Length: 115
Image (cartoon, rainbow, N blue to C red):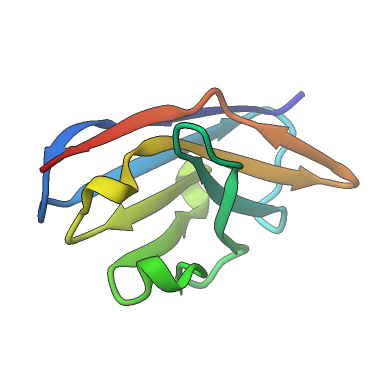
């Protein structure tokens, strides 16, 4: 059974940076696709990007140029680095893993960006 635990969230001022971590445990392979998502208050969950091995930038236009997803396979950990944070980045950030045909979710970590 795979478990995902996110960490690194908190309160940040506008313009600040955060690196979120997602530690995976259990039957997960370093070839399983992992992803980051976020859900702002009153909005649907938004897909940010996914990764197998090579670092990648985030998908949403609102995050282009300031968001990177990376992975340390040796530590079974995926990272989300977000720079130049804005109040609209306030959300619960989730990681997920696609194991076969099942998507496993972490519990999420809250990021609040103050203006």
